[in-house]
Amino acid sequence: MGIMMEFMMKLSPDDSFKNMYQYHKIGCPIAWISGWLNKVSLYKIEVNLDTCKNCGLCDKACYMPSIDEKKYSLYKPAMENPAESFSCSKCLQCVEKCPNGSLTFKAALLHLKK
Image 1 (spheres, rainbow, N blue to C red):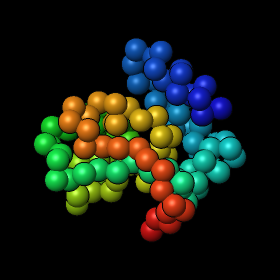
Image 2 (cartoon, one colour):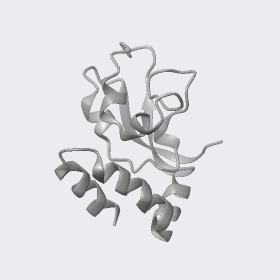
Image 3 (cartoon, helix red, strand yellow):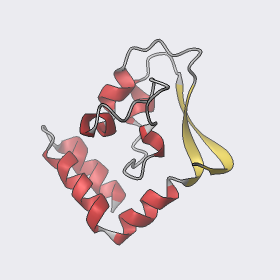
Image 4 (cartoon, one colour):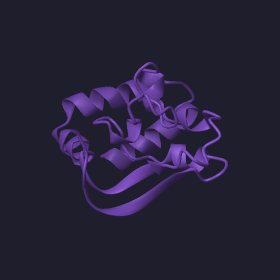
């Protein structure tokens, strides 16, 4: 289901499927499970703040800051990391758009998040 939603979001020229995705996260039991699994994850998106140039391309690629730009940011340390949010689908657009590799998606031991 998540793969299908990601495919539909990439085909959409506007934000209509992003809104549909948020509805999907609220109304689908499978999405509830995947959202909960973002809290207990074998894989995570890490930000290396030492190499980050604060260009903001990761936030522009991620749909989470577009939903609430005052709450989520991958590169601003004072804000909530959208990759750890219930609504993150791990589409990895943020990692792909980072020009200097400051974002990485890697396996971790069972990583419990707050």
